[in-house]
Image (cartoon, rainbow, N blue to C red):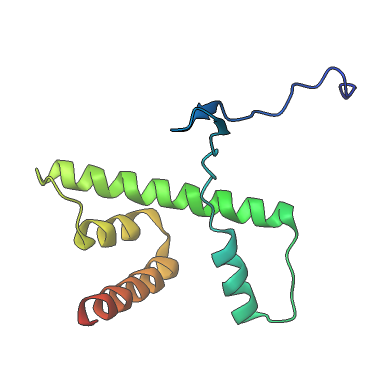
Length: 122
């Protein structure tokens, strides 16, 4: 059974901070960074007349965060194995090849190479 309104925990508020004049000012809460706007932009570029529910958007955001974590941890592990202090594009590319399956890895590597080339030439 769902809790009643009186039983619900109050929403978290930021602790007040005193300004130079001595007035209390609410501290801003840090917003959680998401990929939602980027997912939406890509969706509109691919299928302009299609929408997406907030639940589906949340699932895609979680998926991207999960893949990012897997690739980043694999790249860090590769750098550690090779006794390198820095994760470079080479470690990222190898991590992508290890984490993503077959054809998806090939497309990701080609898109990543294209992005790095564009970045270095600009």
